[in-house]
Length: 258
Image (cartoon, rainbow, N blue to C red):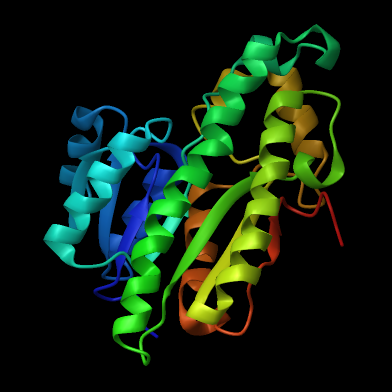
C-alpha cells in the first residue's frame, strides 16, 4: 500500500533523525506528517521548511494530558493516525553517558526512562486506542503501524550509557507486546535498533577520538546518515512488510550481526 495520504505522527521530529523521517515521508512518500516538538516554535519552523503536507503540534511525551489533547486535535483535523513513530528521546548527556552504572543517581535513571520508555508507552496507548476503532469501522482497512526507536546496546549491552541502554531495552519489549496483543486488529509494530548515526546530538558532541572509535566498530567503517534511517522506516511503514511484525531491525553498519 502506498504511503500517499497516510497520516504519520513522528514524535521528536524537529531535528535529527526525526526531522529526516518527517521530510522523507512528506516530500518523497506524499504522506501527511504531524511534526512534533516540546516547543511549538521548533515544530512550526520545521513544518514550514518541509516541502510537503505537514501539521505542527507541541507534544511532550512525559505529559499524558498533553498527549491526549494532541491526539484529539489530530483526529479532529485528519480523522485518523495511520502510523506512529516513537522517536522522541532524552537528549545525549555527555557527562552521564561516560558515568559508571553504580555512580548514577536513581533520579537520573528515571529521567531517561520517563522519556525513552514511558514516553513511547504513553503515546502508543493513546494511538492504539484510535487504531482499534479505525480498524473496527472498516475491516478492509489496516489498523496501523507503530515503529519504536531503540539502540544496539539494548541488544548487546555496552560499557557506557547504562540509563539509555536500560530504557531502550524496555522499548524492544514494548514492541513485541504490541505486535503480539494487537496483531488481531491488524496493527503491526517494529523496533529499530540504531547504531552510530551522525546527528547533532551524537556525532557533533564527541571529540575526534570517540568519533573515530565509533566508526571503527562498524563493518562499513563509517557513521550512518539520518536519511538512511528515513528510507528504511518508510519501507517498514508500508505494506512491503505486511507479513512481518514484532521484529527488531538492526541498523548499525554491521556491528552486530544476528
